[in-house]
Image (cartoon, rainbow, N blue to C red; front, side, top):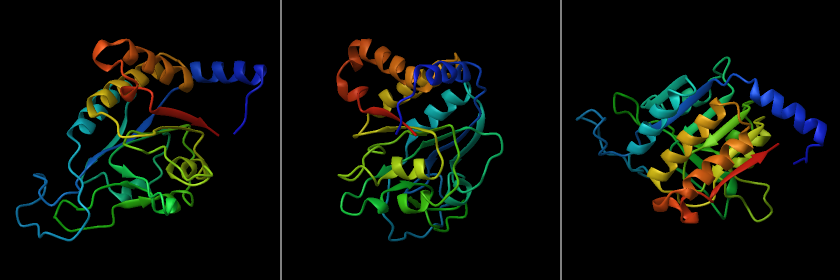
Length: 231
């Protein structure tokens, strides 16, 4: 990580203010055998199941009106589409379950759809070890899920570090279990601020300040777990 000089900072601020953002969104994948989106004849398989994230769908619907982009949701929020290079995009937003493997951080993963639209199971875990070997040169990656910012004791392995190694310039992630409603608020405010021309660090900080100022969400658990890491 580097600390920018004053001249670099001024150039960076101007660059951010004039930036046109274009996003690709992944939200609310199908990863539970009782998900109502599955065909009725779907057979039950012995997979680790994750409950649907209805709030994630609403989150992406809201921020997509601020910074438009391609949305992969439900069955389309799958591993094959994650590997696609969407031309012209500079934000990757992932609103899915995630988990951190403390014993083997390389096995930490984002959770995408475990079923296709025919009810057939498919590979769904995007591991930290896989991510670091992809080419993901995004200006900003937002990991809008629980504990996406955790890393090993030396800080060298985990989802955030893997995205940096894959070419991402900035990562926003969480350090603990996050409240679904507060997360939706945080993301909407973040994207509103980016759309206004604020740089990434300022946009996140101002979103946190706003949430902290609200009586119902002033407790640090609602806002202080979100962190920004820059390459």
